[in-house]
Image 1 (cartoon, rainbow, N blue to C red):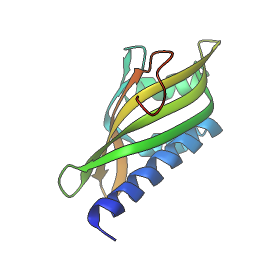
Image 2 (image 1 turned 135 degrees about the vertical axis):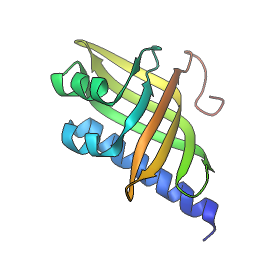
Image 3 (image 1 turned 180 degrees about the vertical axis):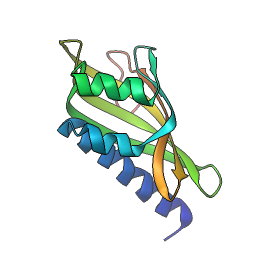
Image 4 (image 1 turned 90 degrees about the vertical axis):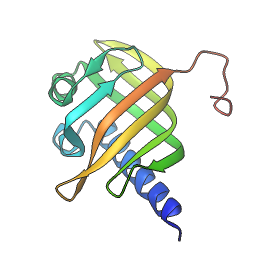
Length: 135
């Protein structure tokens, strides 16, 4: 298998694990996937660091009911980092209100102390009427 294919499998596995843990409400395991340097930009334009995101998740401000990611591209950033992009589909309760979000997202993962950690997340909402094939 090529390095690109291996990297795509790694990225898909990490994103799938993160999605599963968010939907399961597993705050502790999600925390283990996040870098201390996390920059998490939501589709609303709000930005959280690691501890602000985890506090909102733990307190129930964010309740992820379903999280589905589809990666379209993965690019190596040296030996110990990569960026991946694709489509994010999720059902989430934010501040007590249910929302369905379709977004294009970009993630950056970095290997820290032998573990892959999410360093960056940027989501941009996909306008209604745009198909997932063109998003």
